Image: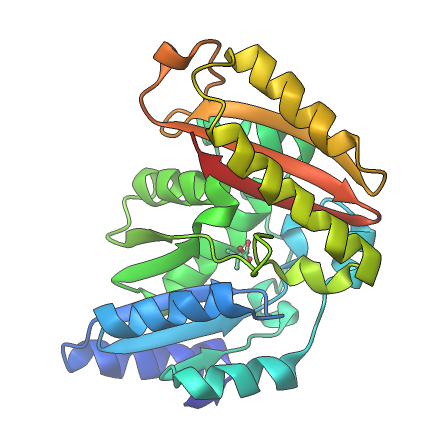
Amino acid sequence: MRIVKLISETQSIISEYKANGKRVGFVPTMGALHKGHLSLVAQSKRENDITVVSIFVNPTQFNNLNDLKTYPRILDKDLDLLSEYEPDLIFIPEAEEVYPEPDTRVFNFGDIEKVMEGKNRPGHFNGVAQVVSKLFDYIRPNNAYFGQKDFQQVAVIKQMTKNLELDINIVACPIIREVDGLAMSSRNMLLSKVERKNAAKISETLFKACNLVPDFSVSQLKEWVIAEINNNAYLEVEYFEIVDDTNLKSIEKWDDSDNRIACITVQVGKVRLIDNISL
Ligand code: PAF
């Protein structure tokens, strides 16, 4: 398990792997690792000769300065967890090297970035695309692994890969949940004990919602989910959308799409959590 900070050193190690015909899997992360991240590492190890993990809290994707400040940074624990999975290379670049000058690139993802997270966190996906395109350029992976919890992020990254004509396979991996159903997230560790307990209501409601299709109409189900969650004093729904999983357009009736996904963002105290489920 090599730990490297410099971009040039990372690039030369990767070139050597490539020269030896190795297939490279890449797991980009912002650290504060949990079992969700580790499942991506495990999958990459199964499917590639070499697995590279990056840990970099990317400043350009935070539209809220306080969110960037409070984002958990626990590198020693992250390295400990990763040592059990033994990725070949851990890349931990410095912000000054990734962004020697402000990145002014503006990406266009069409309609898929205009809804949900894109609408509620202006500039977020542009920042994600800035950093992921840079990381892809340094690592040049064959496969890159992302968690399906960030469903819209996966759609945006697939679109970016297509727009930039990169020969990289984007692999979406299943959401990993806590025993009580809460989707694993680095932000969960920012919840107080009582918030953490109540946060389980989010996934519990999504699971119940699955059983109400098609008896409830789309609008009835939306109202029901929002009311159910907002009924809990610790939770406040920011948005709940039911969309087609390819074009991310909201559906109005169940027949509008064969592949429907329900996406939710909930404010739990100061912490913003997202989750989704196939309906
Ligand atoms: O999903 C994340 O952790 C981040 O958005 C990513 C993909 C590592 C880019 O900073």
